[in-house]
Length: 380
Image (cartoon, rainbow, N blue to C red; front, side):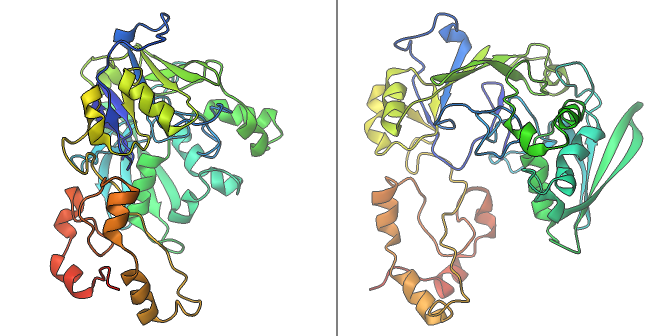
């Protein structure tokens, strides 16, 4: 769920609360970054930045590389959780079936070094797991058995067409393949193949590189500077997508800064002071802070658009969890409303039984009659 056109940016809205400040002049403003041209975000980086390589695990790489933001490295497609539409980025969706997903690479897509984004780049990152079991994207090979490449003409322009073949023999799940196409960020193969060669084809050594000096990226922003206090991105005015995707418009902020604080309290205070424009950190009782100029995605509870269901996954092969009556008793012992009201400040729609959300885009699939008949509510 990656691209939402907010302030002209392709920013990932994760399934967490995002609270907006009044965008006031903040205390301790850095004059190097004019406030009117700078967007301050928070909630994705907690410790010192270690690396900005997209080959590292998501928990290793610093923001925005290690989170689902399309600011430096971009995926082929984007899922818009507000509309439910698949939107184009590096590619556009042509066909989606149970056997394959077909995507055309945008011929205008370019890396910041001027080279075109090509199928070699896509195959490199998606098939890295065939070469290195420790690759962060190795799991993709369980779902994608092959990537076929054809060159066709689209409106008179030579275009590379990729067919992602669903792995029927292993994990036959075309929906996961669709998710991978918007979750995996494409990297420049010509850069990382050279780095692998320089490091004796040892991916663990490449994963340790910081990649913080003029990184070759495809997105609208690049790394400007960083420290243990913040990470600063600067807009790339020559970004290929300005013309190809956004009608010639630049992203609004010239700079995007992610301050690094030690606790949720620090984020909360910064938000109230106007030192942050948006925070996806947990802030209890948000309705008590609106008087300080803090706004929310929605005007009333649950204040944000829920995007996920917290779950307990039970090992049904171990006694007494093998007994379905025991499992139902366990489910009935959980006071769902107390969790909703006390643990997460009411930041949840009404809790309904089942694995389908009863709100927003999923609501059309929710069956209230089945939930009533088969569901379990708190019952001592």
